[in-house]
Amino acid sequence: MAGTIRSIARAGVSAAVLLGGTIGASAGAFGIREQSTIAQGEAFAGAAAGSGGVSSMFWNPAAVTMRPGWVTEQNLTFIGLSGRITPQAGTNPGFLPLGGSNDIGQGAILPSGATSYQLNDRLWVGIQTGAPFGLVTKPRNVWAGEVYGRSNRIFSLAFNPVIGFKVNEWLSVAAGPNIEYFRLTLRQAVPLPINPAFLPSSFLKGESWGVGFTAGALITPWAGTAIGVGYRSSVHHDIDGSIGVPLLALAPLGGQVRANLNTPEKLSVGLTQAISPVARVSLGFEWDNWTRLGTVGIVSKTRGVPVSFLPLNYKDGFTYSIGGEYDWSPALTLRAGVAYEESPIDFSNRSVRLPDNDRINLSVGASYRWNEKLTLNVAYSHLFLDRARILSGVGRDYNVQNIAFAGVADGSADLVSVGFRYVFGDVIAPTPAPIVRKY
Image (cartoon, rainbow, N blue to C red; front, side):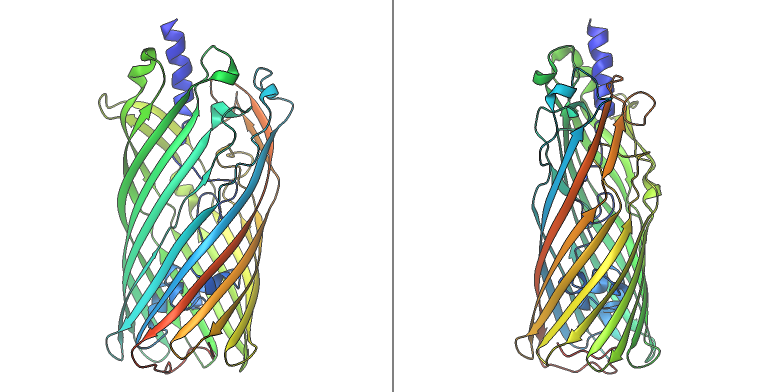
């Protein structure tokens, strides 16, 4: 009997997902794109070309050179998620009566910011901070897909100091280290041979610090045009953590574990073009190399052998965006944009922990220049996610003790962001200004 219980628990632990994420993650898979209130107002179109102000350093560190003097931008974004997973025919008959997940969405508030400081006519330093990955989901504790996921919690924080150099009047470059913290706590039901409505939970916890880098270039070939290319490298994480499983018979499966995780690198390309003294249009493209995650192994630190593995097997993610902004008055700028994202997750690699799919982002925003030093920013976005089919069990990457789960996930998200820009010291007009701005 103990051998049977251990084999069941091993299957349950094997589905303990090392990476959480949610149906409502604001970027593909478990990525978070909300690093700039200004850029969000244009659906992040042209962010790599500086359309998001100093906060564009997340996409392209060369944006540090766009404004003279000492400038800071701070942003706060509320992400309101809504998502449900509904079981369908094909789900194990012992679990199907437990019903759907109810709303798995959990609201989150994300801070981000960027500061630039000009040392001389050619050299800038700056720092960008934010949360590139994460969010939280929690279905009902007892539901038809409980053996594949009961809760996911991801937290990350990145610090990216950069040095920017203005090569000449039309080219700036920048680079810097990206210091990243990653933490997770995941839970799911262990399919013991008892009533499915009273199954205990196992958990996986872990955290890590890792270091990567960012680099980029900003080109302003003539007045009114800005072209930017930025790169964020993959960050390698040696995650230290623990697995907890119920019952003494399962104790050998618990304990301290480790895992190697490589986050996806990102390539961003942006264009901002002034079409009049008071109007600009922006285009954006982002590539995220989610294929780098592959299959993640979870290894016992005491025995040195794999306890489990996670077959993420994501695909590349692509985002295309277009947006524009208009100076309604010298104090008020309005903006709007739309983006389409091809998710790295599809039917072949989708799980109840990450029921992600392609999405459309519709955004609006505004900036109000309070005075010469202070500008207030606001943005709103709604994400429309395609319905996502889920199938776990025999013959699938996600398989816990051959317990089948079939379902459909529906989701959307509303995002509200507020922020400000503040100029310290004397206000200096950008010279030469890469694009005409009045806020």
